[in-house]
Image (cartoon, rainbow, N blue to C red; front, side, top):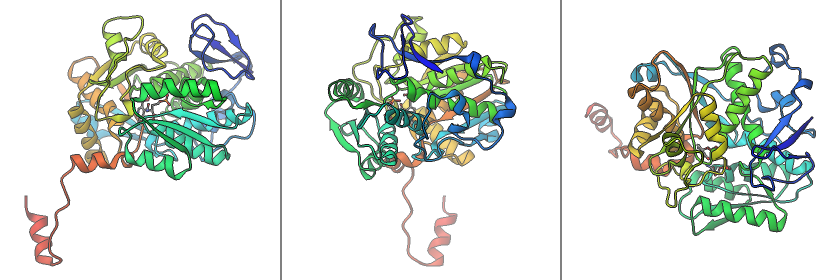
Amino acid sequence: MYHLECIECHRKYQPTDVIYTCTCGGLLDVVYDYSNIHITKKDLKGPLSVWKYRALLPITREPISLHEGGTPLYRVDRLAKSIGMKEVYVKHEGMNPTGSFKDRGMTVGVTKALELGKETVACASTGNTSASLAVYGARAGVPAVVLLPSGKVALGKLAQALMHGAKVLSIRGNFDDALKLVRDLCDREGFYLLNSVNPYRLEGQKTIAFEIADQLGWRAPDRLVLPVGNAGNITAIYKGFREFKRLGIIDGVPKMTGIQAEGASPVVRAIKNNAAMITPEDKPETVATAIRIGNPVNAIKALNAIRESGGTAETVSDDEIIRAQQELAALEGIGVEPASASSIAGLRKLVDMGVIEKDESVVCVTTGHLLKDSEHVLAVCPKPIEIDATIEAVRRAVYSN
Ligand SMILES: Cc1ncc(COP(=O)(O)O)c(C=O)c1O
Ligand SMILES: N[C@@H](CCOP(=O)(O)O)C(=O)O
């Protein structure tokens, strides 16, 4: 059994309540009766997937699923060497059904919408959340409404939302404006809100932690490095590691290390200034459109995760993001979108600064697939070389510098 609980005033809500935040304004958490959950490593044999960890998910009905989760954990020795480290892994969440980690949250969130009898689902999005909601809405046979910041969504993500039949609304404003608007829309129209302020979304995403522990032979890495935008994923993954520790499945929890773009870094500034809360940014800007967010809704949970775990937060420049994206693609064959590459750029920067020790074991989470944002790829890569259809021309081109 489980209930919802406010992280500020600890007021409790029932699973049948349709509520996203507490009446006091605080964020909600899903809290289980852990004394009644008895899972061991032995029970967790078998292929990876979100629903393998069903005993720790707040769902009773048959899930709406497209085989989400079970993403690869790659050991990246060439990249590690170039950074000066020994043990680095990449958990590639771009290998989910719609190409991002959001699917883990949506399989749980859309299933919860059906349990609660909701007939329309909605979100604001920088792109990936809307792609995932459109797909899972279609799978469930439930209409989806998505609000996007006009002109700031990568084409691959927009294409997914359109093709899977969502009502796509392009807002003259940024993501933070769109989120405010969709929260109001959901309150007025009874649509089910599936941004990460919805605590059930985060329950699905915490399975990233379960899989990493599973793939490392039931241990946590010393450190987890990941991009931070609306700050749900860092919160969810931290919760997953803590739950496995509490159940005796792993011994420790990694240092949670959040990376933001220089132009959209409220969480990093709060960590560096030792502030209790973030100061929102009015005009966030970065090439990594997925994390172009100035007022992350889960900021307080993310600050707790970073501080409690002994982690840290750092910014990276757009140039550092692009270099890391190219390096991961060329050195290791792993194609990720710019926001995801910020985890690699952040790792390099924190090692150079001496904040991360060279002998730590580190998992970088790459959150979305390269093909999500192919306009960006074409803008930063050399153009194809056009030549005549002759072997001489081919040879000249192959051997030219
Ligand atoms: C590809 C990608 N990476 C990172 C993030 C940031 O995740 P979060 O909002 O959970 O911090 C997002 C969206 O928010 C995303 O789409
Ligand atoms: N990058 C996100 C922003 C919204 O985050 P959410 O986790 O609160 O839905 C996106 O893909 O839209």
